[in-house]
Picture 1 (cartoon, rainbow, N blue to C red):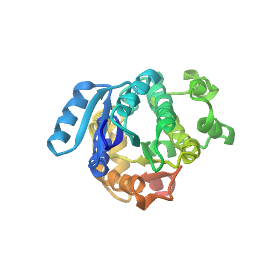
Picture 2: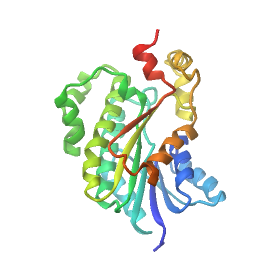
Picture 3: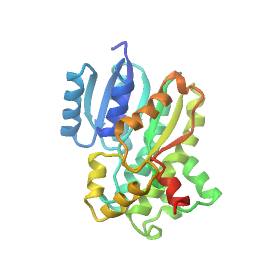
Length: 273
């Protein structure tokens, strides 16, 4: 068994890898992705840069796959950190798939990692500014998103497909759930001396974002970041700057929080011209 700390990274995408490179240099990184080729390619790049990385095939929509992934990490040592950057975008998938991966799968991942996270451990979940762009839910709906048992989440009335008009609304609901769930899980993780937070990025240049730029909503996204105070999209490294605060001792008093990193786009959405 390794004497290293074990970092679980879900989603071999630009944001999660930028964070892993920033804070994972003294950890053994288990890199899970649904596309094993993608995980292998990123792992090879990181290995060549001196990181200790094991690629792993996993499906975030499956509790069994999530548990297998966690058990792979436990083979090497204690789980001390989690980075979840996996998810489907509104242009990539159906309402059902988005709810299964972004909402249910993320909730299960936090729950299962929370069972084994070490004292002093920390997690970061990548949410989205989209969770801030929908109307307020009721107090009871927010509570249900935060603490409903994971296997009952997708049975909630307002998460039924016939009550969700399109994939964007499914995505927004999923991201709202991520943030409420982080609050609920922060309480449980706290009992083990661990912390968990979320980051809600705006338009960050990644392959997923490029899909959106070139998709049916492309003009909408370009207008969004051009109107934002920053006047540009962000980079994965700028998200990693915030994650570094949250995942190190400098952020030791921060848990259950969500940090908007969107160049002011949400501010413009509500209060711009």
